[in-house]
Image (cartoon, one colour):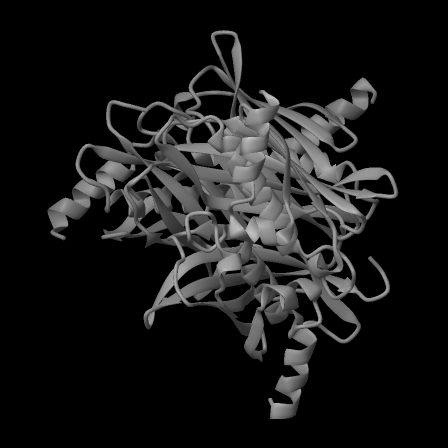
Length: 142
Length: 142
Length: 142
Length: 142
């Protein structure tokens, strides 16, 4: 992928207001794969100082959607039908990284997995894992 | 529950920075039940104008946690182990309401369901449904 | 529904070899709803005498599929994309009853919930709850 | 692990009546890992000739439980709290293989993943993937 293409995708990624508001940024994207990064701020936390599960779920869902969208035909877009997220460990640190990968692409829906890692003092730990089913929708029809 | 108690719970509810930042408010809470409300703003949306799944997931998770926390003994708190959310319909409107209810309380973990409704022009529609497993943790130990 | 129609559906229900082998029977079926019954036998159990989670999952999945199939157009059939099942309590007793209900029907997929109850000495208790996403597939195409 | 130990574990694995009845066999087991095999028979199928989702769910659940049980202390056992299974492809062939791996062990519960593969004419394909939360229970108490 050219630098120009990636820049365009980065810009498009931020068009979702909730994603821009949260501060989630696209790191890299490819066929059925996507990596995003969130610099943690106090407003992302629970009352006990760990990252809120809703923040992790948002990363997992949006990164999964981006990964799946790279494999759909022109004129189609993806929409999450459901996802499950397991919160393996408390997330506390400087940054979250989310890596999503399409497990099985399809014509009606795709199965995607997303892993959320937390970077703390240079250590990267898996803190959450999600599995999502994304519906593939023809544009202009729902 | 007295007005004073509910006011205290409302204040405590907002102590989670991500919840205060999102704008989620406690409406009512009881034994194993909780209702929360989110006045929708443009920053809660996806690029296509519907509420982001991450917003709905945050409501479901946090409201489920509040419902479950009403049934645990002193010295214990709850932490989401996992949740699944099904996104039944696009959510577009003025307000989201989340109603969570404990399906089965327990000593090690509780099962909770949460329904997310969207209010649009006076009509209330179920837009998402989540099921969560919450671990019950002794304070000062993890 | 006439007695003849229900008898035909009952017979069709048993055509799935695994369902016939397990002993699962159709009790009643309607638009987006289905109830099934399993008379428990020693072979349905775990080593500790409670019903195996796999048996409960089979009931939930198959009953959900039957409920969803009542709402699809001619020439289409349903196929489970995913399901989650929460095992609320140990199931021990004489009979399992599963009640499935379509939460939201759709053109590409339907969301269905299924509750598994255990009957023991005349008491009916909810032992498991499942939520499923079913794909709606055009016959002769996959 | 010695041959004798593995033989003892194999024998114990079959003590669950539903597992013995289904025909599921232990292939190998280690710390937080387990592999099981099911020789497919007509009675494992759906009416359309593919393996029933309930069969795949049983494999995933039981193999996940065996993997998790290898990491719990003496006097404790595991019990599935919930699992989700995504059915990626139709399973048709001679044999199912299930590989489970503990993603995160814990004191109160463990997170486990299980992959189900189908062997058909020498080709091994991933047909389902499950994620489970297993509660760790002190024996003699529930």
